[in-house]
Image (cartoon, rainbow, N blue to C red; front, top):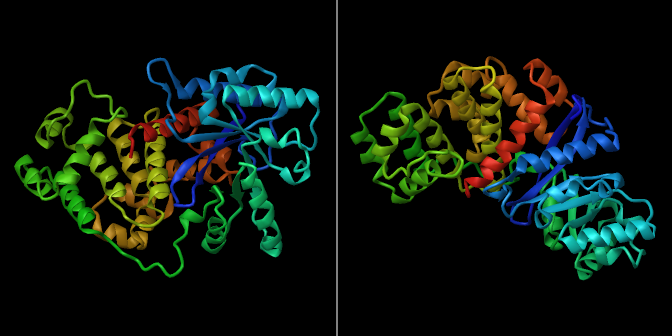
Length: 403
């Protein structure tokens, strides 16, 4: 794989703000507009297929869709045979079609791949192509929204799903969701909804914070158990996460005491941090929660190559907490008043500086495609391959948790 090629991912939401999948695009040297050659894209897609396929478990993305940006040359390469067709939508950028192209697309549809078009307006009258399309990607334009709403309605009647891109506000999201559109891209989930008041900690999160502080102080396991018994659902979720495919323990953990015996206190802290994020009931919590989990795992995996084990575990916690302000609806300084964290983790959360901050900054660059991936990776002396491996492994890990 080229040393100058990075994978950038973007979550795609449904009308209920849940993650329906991810779109993967490619950046040359982290440059926002850097264009890769066809062979480089073929190598990257082969890399994705290799990383997300497991001999025992099969396709690791579960029911979540993966949208892949592909040039026409990819359709002829044979690299797509290693992907899971029913979990993959191929995004094409076509200005015209011919018989050979139609034959290729038809064959892909018969195998189960989804087909997405970026510039459907120029091809809407292509009666041969339109029945083969499963998705179209459109850009929000308020100036002629009423006219385009009719266009989107016609597409839906043709059983084509519409994914709206470049949404910059919740008002735009709500307008599109009101039309019954199917998917939404953009980073609006990182901004609070207007009129939604800050909620702060809910009772479950307050209890988890109490447990985290007790673990930090190495409290007796009897005391931990007495607190956790107050909420059977939390106890169940904690044990389910610890026993998840993502943890890899050989024996099933039966109780909190068993967990402490098998894992010790430090790993238990990381699982409580996961529990804290997933205990949120904020409106956009599903996508924030999954993003935080991927960040935490991504940063931890990258840290394994350059930091001691306990420091890499701190990276997981930093990644998990990096969106806690948005999950709780309060500022990050207020979050840190509630949670006792090391100075290094706090520094990363507040300013993306210190020992852990650059890892978080790289994780964010891989999410928003701001053209800084290469610069952030260079600062940590990690290669594109290491970045891409960690990102895909984190995606699969989060999916295996079955949140």
